[in-house]
Image 1 (cartoon, rainbow, N blue to C red):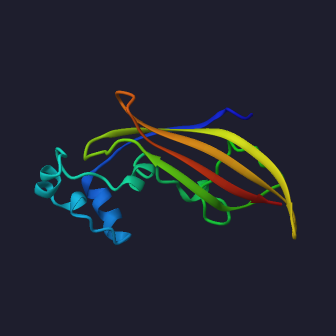
Image 2 (image 1 turned 120 degrees about the horizontal axis):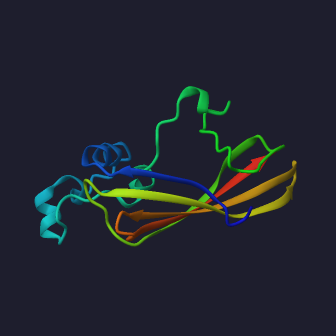
Length: 151
């Protein structure tokens, strides 16, 4: 199971979407909004905020694809007996900026499932590694996520 590709999704970065995202998180960097400023700083056009890259390939889950806690179900994760889940942390490395119109493929691989015991009992630390690449295989970003799964 470790090393298994859990998911591969593709999406296109759009200026409208990443500018809305940047405004929502109050990141008003002119590189994201002002084409002249972006060009003056060596970019062909406005660029997406680095963390936005993880949202471009995501689809929009329908109501029946959500778990009772409101998060999208990840059926490929082998977590029988551990229905409660929460984010445990994220590490990101950014390699290359992306611009409006860039197609991104996200490939998520299961890298570890570590059983632990805490004060309230057993839990799992589930680690995945996602690479974000362009159509010409340029590595844009890598994100390692840790999920905490509880019985």
